[in-house]
Image (tube, rainbow, N blue to C red):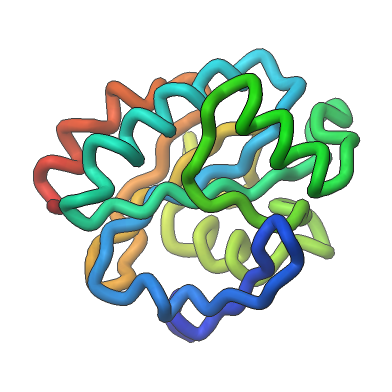
Length: 158
């Protein structure tokens, strides 16, 4: 299965095919508004603004699986991200990113790019996956890796 075969839902519940991003670089992030890493939203937004014209798509996927740090519904998540962090990059419906109910997107991402010591599981919010223009998962970044530290990798792919 290709990443482009996977369908997701936008934060407003509309179906979205990842094949719509074919030919673009994607930075896919599991997010949570009440997480200590939530200030990274601003850095992700800056990447979106800076590199979007060159073909970067930052895609946020809220999840409530880590210490219940995303308890709100989609409308409240969207509003919070816009008002508090200025987010305009695409946000998606809240999903599971690990465990038996993990969304197929995150099952694919964790299979293709393993974490520390080869683990597949996502350990916390704001784990980031970098996908090249051909749909290959090329790098996984731990939650503590800030968006500015991803820029050298973006430069190589864009």
